[in-house]
Amino acid sequence: MNKARRNPFNVAASHAILLTYTVIALFPVFVILINSFKTRKAIFREPLAFPDADSFSLIGYQTVMKQGDFFQYFQNSMIVTVASLFFVLLFGAMAAFALAEYRFKGNTLMGLYLALGIMIPIRIGTVAILELMVSTGLVNTLWALILVYTAQGLPLAVFILSEFMRQVSDDLKNAGRIDGLSEYTIFFRLVLPLVRPAMATVAVFNMIPIWNDLWFPLILAPAEEVKTLTLGSQVFIGQFVTDWNAVLSALSMAILPVMVLYVIFSRQLIRGITSGAVK
Amino acid sequence: MSQANRKPRFKWHIVVFLAPAVLVYTAIMIFPLFNTLRLALFSEVDQVRVFTGLDNFRTLFGDPRWSESFWNALGNNFWFFVIHMVVQNPIGILLAAILSHPRLRFATLYRSAIFVPTILSFVIIGFAWKLILSPIWGIAPDMLDAIGLKFLYAPWLGKEEYALTTLALVSVWQFVGIPMMLIYAALLSIPEEVLEAGEIDGVTGASAFWKIKLPLILPSIGIISILTFVGNFNAFDLIYAAQGALAGPDYSTDILGTFMYRTFFGFQLQLGDPHMGSAIATAMFGIILIGVCIYLFGIQTRMRRYQF
Image 1 (cartoon, one colour):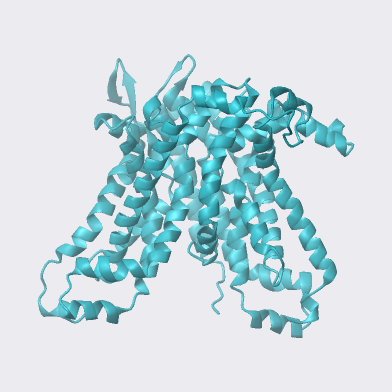
Image 2 (cartoon, rainbow over the protein chains, first blue to last red; image 1 turned 135 degrees about the horizontal axis):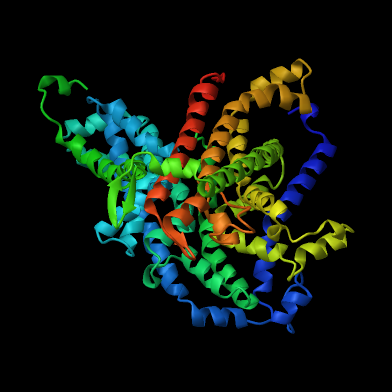
């Protein structure tokens, strides 16, 4: 490192810019969180102050607990996200293995066909998806959402995973074949463990959009017992617009699970993006 | 593989490996996509579905009531996209350029913090900003007052002339993390020797950025642009969460996603019409396809890629 790229003024300016933007990025979240613990009066009198002994109140949370079935919503979101990720990873890895490992007629064509969905959003087909779900009786079930998110996640999963599977050593697989392992055993026992980091990347990429989606829950599963957390909080907040305590608490409760997931997975996510998985 | 030549027999395992993904993908994504394009050619007359050819498109573009809404939504959508391109991407590049500076302290901390809005749902974002900008709560006017700029305040989300731009900026605020991360990754992959060679020739600091780094990260900027384009032209959630399906005030924040939702699902007194909804979806499909083709054939092939 030489002097030309180490200028103390630049360092100070860099920190100033980054700090400013960090404040801009976190400010709304911060305001929502601190005000959700305050009384209605305090919310309006001093919106930027921390809750103190005088202004502390959990009334908003109590309203939310009484009115909305947030545990049910949370559970639905959890089931949908976990099941979709499972299928995206399993089916995606299997297809990626077939494309990366075997030479067969139509291999490239199949790869292109599966890659189509990377650029074309699945939402365009919503009208027909709803018809399909109505005719198969899957409307207002979690399965409708799981299937849609699986289809939505597969193209990118196949694309990323097949890149990684090409790097798995041929010698290892051939050694397994000589030992008489079946192709399935080779896939599940030898290859899958080796691409685990790539699978984690794909999982983290898919997790956030699935958890946060509003469009498909709104259209395919709006019934009370299958509402996801995102849709549930949207409807709840819509009904309680004038009850500021309840709205702020509902928002905080919707923020919490995502933040927890982010804290757990942020290293994986950032490593995934910066390792060039999405070039 | 040498054993393949020995005895050509049908390899069932390839089918087994491919089948689940191909079946789900075809049944839930590709088939409905084309079915939607097909449904756009039908209409419902006396509760029976009849083939009407291009009538829906004639209505969409020809009938002033429909075409006005359509062009309004399309125009708004373009403005939405323009704001993203001119605000989100430069900010993302600036932040990435600073973050990629070697030996910058707390870089990880900044990176994680700036990415936080990106992981929150549109519902949270939409309501949070609605509250903050609300004249009732008064956070935004009070803060402007504190720096003596109170006269600048207006109820932005409630005014026709500002609402769309405000929402676009909220969306920029939310997604700035993505260009930042992708550009950051691209900047890190520039080898040290290239930069050192530049230094020996006296190219340092800002000019090193403009003359060496920027040309090298152009492909990443291209990818970000097309991702932004596709994302913006099927956006829906933020507008719906902040302004509702009517995309108020007076449709000034209506974009193609909300327009399609209203048409397809119906709202208030208007009944839903899946066939007109399909026609709008077809138009969106066309727009996205044109954008992707321009990128793939017009931009990506012309861009010089450097291999290190």
